[in-house]
Image (cartoon, rainbow, N blue to C red; front, side, top):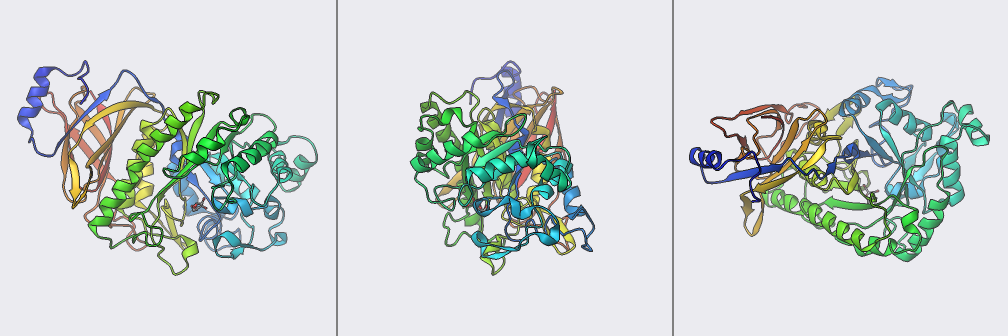
Length: 514
Ligand code: AHR
């Protein structure tokens, strides 16, 4: 543990230890003096790819649907996303972005071509949810826009035209946009050039991709403020790809960030990832262990950035795909539909804590994905909708958006099973613009509760919410939508101490009072 700050007196520390059980006692200190950086709201970003039941059914039902909708976007899902204050949405992929031709999704609905989504099982793609539908959705939500340009089957011409169509105030493309019903230009906040270019995005060598990137980035222009340009980078620990791309002589002047993809497979095996529900405790702890890799992976990226002296100081890491990936619930593997449990909630909170602790470099993160795909916020079935435990974590973490991330020091007991041991507790703290300190705590232990002594930095009272559940795979269903939902949580200090109790499998977000 690092040396105590000004709030801690030896007398208080002695008192705390005297009145609390020594076993399984975690200890937390927060440095109030040297913040890490502003937590970009975009780290709570979403990802909307055309695959499975997203966007069709999950978001877009069409104006003629019996499901209540506004201009084709279902009202229940929209209201849930609005309540989440979604900061940014990445669209239209993923792998699908490299197959997407934006002109297919323009104009009258009945004249749009029916295509097949060949990267996701050849499923019908009606193109009903296109450029206008996406940008209108983002605008209504107040979300920033993150467009993934088509590098695989597109062209610089096509990408440049799309950006002109979206943002021009005069000229033929602006007139075409107006004729399609949109007078004012939209804002494109971020563009990615390619996706997983080492894999589904073309199996390109980093050298070949870097050349292509430079070409696209040179023509990816908008009218007005320019979008931030994001390079398609590495996945997991495979750092060399990004390292080589960043060695391209011109790239530092053509990019504001690079992406990183890290998925959590409970078993770590793509052939047998593990089940969403009904899993053994071995797959709980291995999911925790595997997701905690994110911390080291980001550290390695930061160390690699340091080798590239020409990168601008505010060059960012964009973790634009992350989350749990388990074996599919349906026979159609391409739908990537999976149930979402308290394990997903714990995994989400652990990752958000890690992103917040790297607030100086992680400028955006996009959980995969928003509705009905992988670790979704929302699941739908016809007219029904349910919020997942992951949705509740995102909602609970809202007070962190735009706050100053603070450094935490944590002494935590281990949670162990067989040969595997992980830290039981994870913590993240931030100072909000109103001066209040907000604290997130996760107890990743599937079996035991823990207490945490948070007296050190002067907090005397904590109030907020807790998300927990009685079983490892507790989840919400259409018939029982409130099995896992946040409950009020409060802890009051006594005689100069503040001790918080963390039940097993729990996520807590509290505001601290001194
Ligand atoms: O999120 C699903 C897929 O995972 C994305 O399309 C791709 O980029 C990644 O491999």
